[in-house]
Amino acid sequence: MSDQGKAIVAWIVIGLIAGFVASLIVGGAGGIIGWLIAGLIGSVVGGFLARQLNLKLNTGNEFLDQVIIAIIGAIIVIIIARIIT
Image 1 (tube, rainbow, N blue to C red):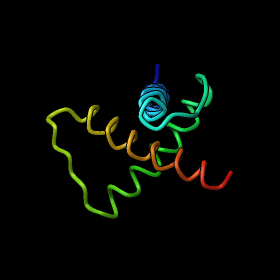
Image 2: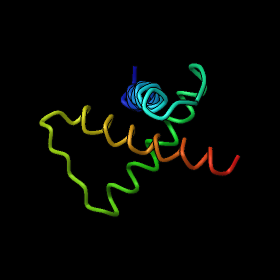
Image 3: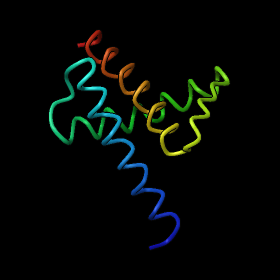
């Protein structure tokens, strides 16, 4: 598998984890598709906010840092989706 393919798979895995955990924390985003959508959008939102706020978690594990930031972003996405709908 190419590096680009591995990156896409990693992004999907992070999105699923983030969406699932965020849905456990705030509820909603039903099912695997909902988790994936909330997690992927949350990854983008969380990454953007982390860059803007110069947030560095430094847990010692880059994958864990990305998952935590994606979870925070997914929570924000779910809350905003609830407000809009």
